Length: 141
Length: 114
Ligand SMILES: Nc1ncnc2c1ncn2[C@@H]1O[C@H](COP(=O)(O)OP(=O)(O)OP(=O)(O)O)[C@@H](O)[C@H]1O
Ligand SMILES: [Mg+2]
Image (cartoon, rainbow over all chains, first blue to last red; front, side, top):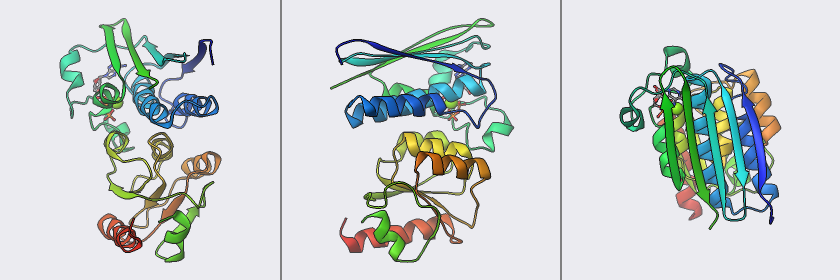
């Protein structure tokens, strides 16, 4: 795998039955490519949390995944409401998830902390009323 | 202990057999909140939960748990059942509460020496 492989997914809003499909697809592609299992698990967890956040908190968006021999680079861009206070949002336990999604098991306020924990690098750019772009990378050891 | 070996103890019903009954179970994890399970469930564990929607299956696949155990007689909903089939996720079920279900698996793991 000398070249960079790019995968792109459009994420539809409020569709919890499809949520996780992009992450699952990335997982199976990484497996086919022979990426080490530890790196696959990190990508799967970090990407799923980001994907779900786009479904719950934004109006969907677009995920781009670039796979190179050294690392997996993920960009999650949405045109949602933006995050007013990133520091607060990053805290374990902080959540504005509505009751409907809490009853499905979301809303622990652990998604962003998981993304931070399972990626080797993470950055959030957000603007109120414009959207949020999260970038993460996982190194292939 | 493998999934197959756990099934032989006849403590659990099989909701979906999954693609790999020879897969090892190396621990037990309990929590219904998905992001906590995602962050803390160790790979290859048996995940005991009462949350039976499609997101449970997504988390099980992505966190790479060995199997899902539905406690308290809770059913997987139809979409979740279909997704489990499609993704090859082993799902078991019991009428026991979460703690007892997990304890039973733990005891089997201990006596299997794994
Ligand atoms: N893409 C996003 N757009 C707007 N707000 C977001 C976005 N992602 C996260 N947030 C905000 O940050 C908060 C914390 O996110 P986080 O993923 O940690 O927890 P959660 O989604 O509320 O619950 P959990 O992920 O544990 O199910 C959210 O409740 C929401 O207010
Ligand atoms: Mg979240």
